Length: 234
Length: 290
Ligand SMILES: Nc1ncnc2c1ncn2[C@@H]1O[C@H](COP(=O)(O)OP(=O)(O)O)[C@@H](O)[C@H]1O
Ligand SMILES: [Mg+2]
Image (tube, rainbow over all chains, first blue to last red; front, side, top):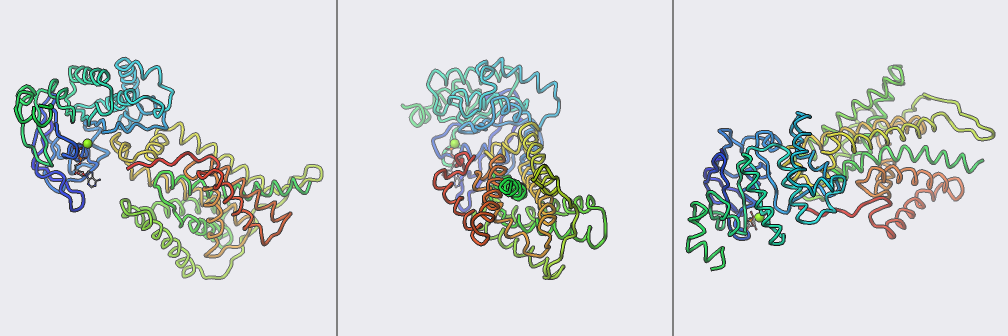
């Protein structure tokens, strides 16, 4: 579904991503783990077209995304839940959800999906007229996920959904991620919380200062000595 | 009665400021820049209306439409050529560029249309008299136009899909792009609306003060900018309120205190308001986001 080859991304003179390649296949949950500053968010931004790579290729179902204007990428079936949630604080919950469906034109379908995400996240239904800025961190994370789902993505990118949330909420969020995947959405999950991410991932990659240092199935990496030392606290 | 008539006159003047301030404020809210060439777009609109109505004797409405069309296109072209290449530049570079565009428009007008002052024809005379109070129709139409613009714009921003996208861009352009919003297109639309409004303001302005010359946009531009800051820059009701308050303060101080000092008084009021409420009358706290 998503295939990244020899990707390089620079910020001015700083090379943040130094030639990485990985793929996400239909129906998988793939996770990219790595410590702070490894280049996870940079990779996500490059895939969504917010950053222009210096070189390399990003293919979504055979279409080159690096040559696609960023506003067209969503309607091709790729959505992102960005790091730090980035909900539109001054707009209501429902307006945020409608913005998620911005690229769509099927009014009936949008209404159906609104009902669907409210079912998935009942707390959002109770707060649908509230400005998103008044929600708690966990609720904002749910809103950011629901907003991304409103575009009906084939593949959903999530950048550190567990950031700043209580362990209980993190568990809930990871359950929802698995549910979304079971409903047929492919998932690329970026996490610092390696333990949880590896537990639900089919396959995983370890990103270290802009390079992929390890790859394998979720189980393999959970068991790996290097990963245990570096990311799972021994 | 004299007071009431000065007050209404002030509301008329304030309505023109408000319409110009809306353009300033919308562009600031979405592109996060002060478009100092906004006043000169007004000047171009005034010349267009002057040529259509006075030189080619076309109906007033044709003059209005011509001014709106030319200014709308001009605003979009300015953004594309001068500001878009600076999307990631420092705000100081953008500000200097905007001042450059302003001089460019003024000098082009001098070259093309001469430096002499042209007299805009009377397009609407007569007054509505109620008892001893007499209000020019022009003032009434100016105030009415401002109210209609305010209502339509508010509905557009709050109720339409494009309006929602504009608000999203004003909060977080990166997140807006992740929604599939074409941010460049939204910025173009904002400049188009702001410049179209500037054209309408230009006609109301020269219909009241009938001199047309290449630097005519500077003073109303600065006053409208003041009104936008006064009301809370980036806020649409703020621009509206700021414009009206500014017009009324200016007109009343001209009538009761001093014609020479009226501008100084206006700026003094601005400074006092900003000292008490740094974000302006209706401004929200500024979002600092990367
Ligand atoms: N806007 C930026 N300008 C310059 N350097 C940046 C910028 N954003 C990130 N970086 C650098 O790129 C590297 C990768 O950052 P990032 O992708 O945010 O890492 P992660 O998401 O894994 O924590 C870091 O060294 C960071 O300092
Ligand atoms: Mg990150």
